[in-house]
Image 1: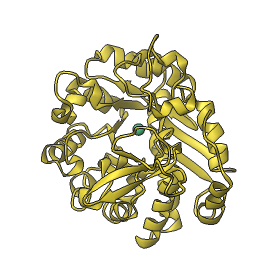
Image 2 (image 1 turned 30 degrees about the horizontal axis):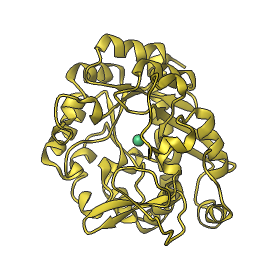
Image 3 (image 1 turned 90 degrees about the vertical axis):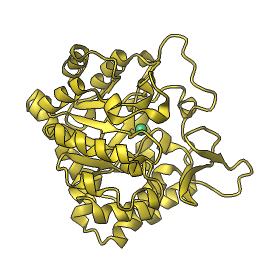
Image 4 (image 1 turned 45 degrees about the vertical axis):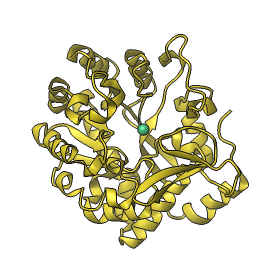
Length: 343
Ligand SMILES: [Zn+2]
């Protein structure tokens, strides 16, 4: 199983993307795990996208797919496991460390607010990882809608990240996402209180439609340790606004593979968004095109199309584009690895 790559996909790559993309790509947001991370007896939901990849997605799977998606490009990446409270986070960190070299491949530990700091320290140091990936599902004492950033990342964990200069990929919680006043406050708080930590707000703060982003990047733009990744954002308006209103050298390309390898596109509808799906998998607000009204390509290609159009409109230079696709992430992660593990 896996991706069935069509001629029409190849044409998109050759006609629209190949000339635009730099030779080296750093994908800063990838989920990788093998069978050792999946607990005994665990069943993925029937419409989980991992079923498309035999219920795992390893480094070999990722690189194999990228050989087809982006032929001839040198891929570097930052990756972490599947953020599920059912998964064994120690086993996931071991797998992540095993397939990372801190040269091309960097890895992060998933963290639950219940994890003891001694355990997190061990996971990070034993497996030579560059940071954390918390997730709202690990906060099990409140309704998902009430989870705050400080619940996801307790002070002890942030102090350790601050001391070691680790990165944190943060998928912000709460309704309204970037527009949520408590999020706005806590996003800036966490950056200011822990200036040594590098906070990467995933999916541009989960802003998938224009109203969700306009006016809401200013607080974190002023924090030198705040970064954004573009994972799953293909909205050219959101991307253009971000390129014009957030320091370019702190924007990182990320795909969110393997979800990005599904066929679909995220679309803005009446100040909301939905994932229009060409395949019947359940991801967030998915609407499946059961009658095959249109031909889809991969979210992955739609994301690059969006970045291309937005960078044209925002007047980005070749250097800016190289920064977003490679240099920004490469310097961030190589510096963290050097600081913590030498060389
Ligand atoms: Zn993700």
